[in-house]
Amino acid sequence: MKTVHTIAEVRAQVRAWQQAGDSVAFVPTMGNLHEGHITLVREGLKQARHVVCSIFVNPTQFGPNEDFDKYPRTLAEDSAKLAAAGCSLLFVPSVDEMYPAGKTQTVVHVPGLGEALCGKSRPGHFDGVSTVVSKLFNIVPADIALFGEKDFQQLAIIRRMAADLCFPVRIIGVSTVREASGLAMSSRNGYLDASQKQTAAVIYRSLCQARDAIAGGRRDFAAVAAEASANIESAGLVIDYFDIRNGHDLKPAAASDDYLVIATAARLGSTRLIDNVSFSLGKS
Ligand code: PAF
Image (tube, rainbow, N blue to C red; front, side, top):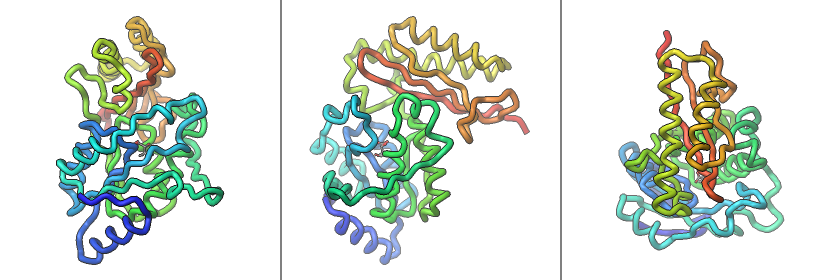
């Protein structure tokens, strides 16, 4: 696996592969890679000849009181994992390469999808994500790009943005990878000790209970969400939101919807964890 740091180098390599008739998959990340990321690389390799991965801790998607400075930077371990998984090219730009001082004024904003759920407590976060992903799509002209469904809202926003701005890339969502306890794999799990990880498994259990209640016929969504929130809080977490939404447009769920997502964010100590389950109610 080759590692490059400049836009010119990554573009030249991707174009050379494509001119030779090879397809390219792209996996954008912020590093501190876990099995969820590696699954994206493996899925990419099933669908394309080469996988390009980027590692860039994007400052514009962190709020002033968030964990940008302490976000784990583990490049050596990440490189070894990517090489072992079959990644062909790793792009590791500096902040200056991505945002040359004074030159980046354009912000990509996807209205409608980013205001609720995580957008409420992380104002500006999704603009930071849409902007950096647009830049990365222009830098790495791949055929497909893969993102984890754990970040359901992010994936919905990226799909909308890619469609609206006609990016010639197919967006592929990949199922969340979980610990045996059900806890969704996340770079932020590294902030938790073993006992906190066990505690945090209540998030997925509560999501599944809420899903099963709805699949079993309940449509009193607010009550289902309140019960699940109480369950999570009784384990010692602090709920940011627990919300049942239409899985296509993220609007509040209606009784007639056939595709739903139940999404939550909760804090365990100072660590903010997110997770979701999406499911179809199988109506015709
Ligand atoms: O999901 C992430 O790791 C980041 O939000 C992404 C998509 C790489 C953009 O910085």
